Length: 189
Image 1: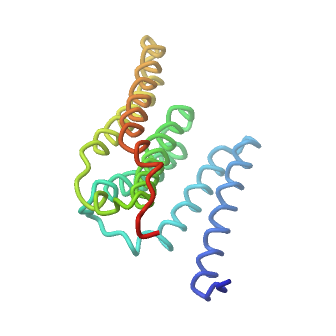
Image 2: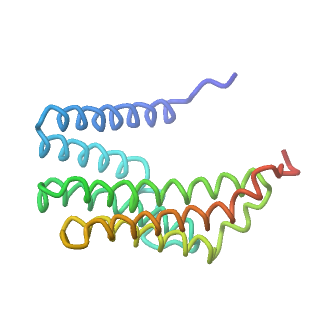
Image 3: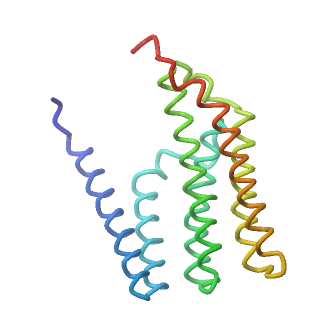
């Protein structure tokens, strides 16, 4: 069994403290200190991204999956800032911006890369992936539609429905692209 080197251990501690900050921010939120909790989550997320991710990511990506990951990493702090500073009364909608526009976008991009990699099709993830562009667009539209519902009370219910349809459409496009590759095994493994 390999022992982790000093760099790996350092990265582990960064991830540990960032995760602790995220959980502590949620605890503050639950205790009624919404702004303080949000700012702690924003700080923790920013600390992690700057120390672990930003150095390996340029501003521009040549692949669709890289672009979607960057957009997701951008949407999380934007949502946290909106939640803490600009729109503290609109928590539910803004949290959908964080979860759908941020974490879901990252999740779908990373999961695609993992499945394609294990299926021996890694090279297909390095360029343009039109299906994943559709997934990204549908997720962002779902997030923005959900946020807009809070500002348009007369069409609140219909906007919730539209957001759900956009999210489900993204999940179906992604499933059609990824699920057929799950049983495949990389011949190099």
